[in-house]
Image (cartoon, rainbow over all chains, first blue to last red; front, side, top):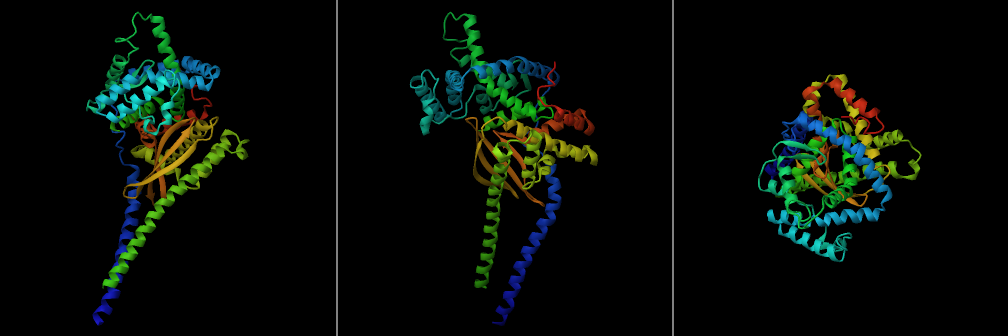
Length: 253
Length: 205
């Protein structure tokens, strides 16, 4: 009994002592940890290989000039004169046309569920949705929109490295792998050369289709670009880092 | 001794519950802060405020809950040591102003976004992540808030929007700057950016 009486306070003292020591150590550790925390390295920014920086910066400035002085006024006019529903319809229509690229990219990555969802959406939107202008597939929970896949992501999923960072005229940020992917996308796309399924397609029509597609996508792109540029210390560096993080995230997902 | 062990477990269990609840409280605190900043930008009572006044009020709302210095220091990283004390303070203040300006001007003129908070995940020692979804202009954005327990309490150290970490993005820019530039150049650049009304003013080839 005596021993038990003695043991109880001793055990409590040990427990309280242990908790205080743990707390003190944590407090003590945190003081130095806070400072160390500020200096820790990021995983996401583990280097962007940019050997062509001077050329890239020049093309970036050129694109920036074109965006601000040509595309921006064009987009402003387009959004001003086009009702929101028409704008959305045009964007949906061109997005629906890119279905073969998304299908192939899902299949090539073994994403069969993604391929199924894309096919279901394409079937419903192309028919009930009047050639893809409307998106009635959104009403089906099992066909909710998924992240868009492309050939660049396929290459990434296959383990092909990004290669050097590139800025493409008009297209903006990219890298060697995504540039190859861009050619892959065009090869799969049935309305784009070199394997267009439309015979005797005059260049004027091709240009008109390309321009309409480009402009219908531009309001979103311009908006995001403006956001990024507005909060950047160095817009070139910000876009390079943002693009790389975004693509790495898309590939890893 | 058996009785004692039971009590000890109870104490430890209680401590665990308190710790979990404290983390959950962070979600409410974050949500409250976001709502308060959106009120400044969108509510009718603040409609007459100028852009600068709105930025000041948004800053006040954020700083009443979080220390903005933490996120900026984390974004600056090791480059902090490349600046003298005066430059460090000035850079902290100017980056703060730049971020707030981008936040307020980025949302102005648009419909108020709806923000929904999701899961809270513990991602390491004294670190948590809070998921959120923001619907703005009929588009859905996934935003992740990363918080760490500092000496000053739980602080936001990173915001990840659509896979792009804000702190990492600024770190990349600041790293690139210090490859060729100095702290004084960075201050000049930040002042230049803040002086511009339109972000496209410097577009020249």
